[in-house]
Image (cartoon, rainbow, N blue to C red; front, side):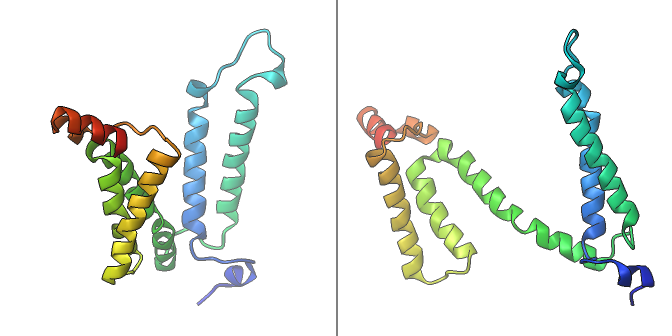
Amino acid sequence: MSTPEQRKFVGRISGQSIFALAFLGFSAFLLSQIGQETKWVKKTAFFAQPRFWPAIGLGGMVLFGGLHLWRLPRRRPQRSDMNEARIWAQPLEYALWFIAYVLLVPRLGYLPVTMAFVPLMLWRMGYRRAPILWAGVGFGVVVVVLFKAVLQVKIPGAAVYEYLPGGLRSFFILNF
């Protein structure tokens, strides 16, 4: 049941309190770090100081974030707010997949990691049929060949290639 304040509030209510709290907290943290991240230079005009405009921007973020939180019809997070925050966090899973990919390429190699990750991402997106997954493996091979051979992008060899015999090691470092 909504209160009169909530009925008069224009816009969506769920998630607002969590967003306002997170924004205010992050803005206050950034403002607290401004002394370590910027300088106040002697014999420089006031408006040309390296710290001036970032301080204005961050001060405005804290001020308006606080005003936004203060003007909300309810400030305590409820179950609908937590559900909304969970929806916001779902894209972070794909950022974690990408970080894992980036961390594994220097260790295992560009070709094997790409050939493994493309079908994994297809599986994660809901494509479960074998022909689609094998097409993903083929796509991974095409991407590696395109980047390494055609575009000649220099990607460092993997650490696992160091265990291969001499000639085979240099072949894998140059091509895969």
